[in-house]
Image (spheres, rainbow over the protein chains, first blue to last red):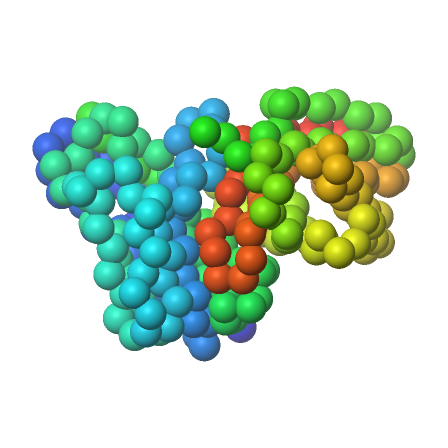
Length: 114
Length: 112
């Protein structure tokens, strides 16, 4: 079946502009995660959605970052007033349910802020 | 504060030999650990996991060892193959439904 997909694959934007990154999880997966990987660094947790529960936003670096999820479907990560330090690969992952540790990752969106 | 650390950014191994990738953690509440493999321009793919109730888990050429007292885990790949060349991330979680903490990754190169 289809895996996790993300769009766009690459995004170049000017400093100060807003961007939206999209994630389509595997159908039926209730849990969805966003991560960020800056150059030379590990994966940094951003936000986690599980079903209809309130999302865990503890990893969002600032109030310029927000994410939404429509039910157990698509998620959008929005970065407002982008800064150069936001340049990174943004990865989305989904898992079958709360008790499934195995996460399936999408290919990522490479964001470059000029 | 980096709760999961991979202190070796890179490792080179001859084909056929054993690759040993190491990971250390600081949070004693972590009870589930995973290894992911990542090729360039792709998302990480799950490789193998281990729960804190075990000290070893084996899957084909891949074995993960957990030393809870030392807060250390390692991934052994034997025999190493050129296709194993990738970046390997370890990750840890404390309880179900909680976030995973990832290490910074180790880039493995298997030399033919």
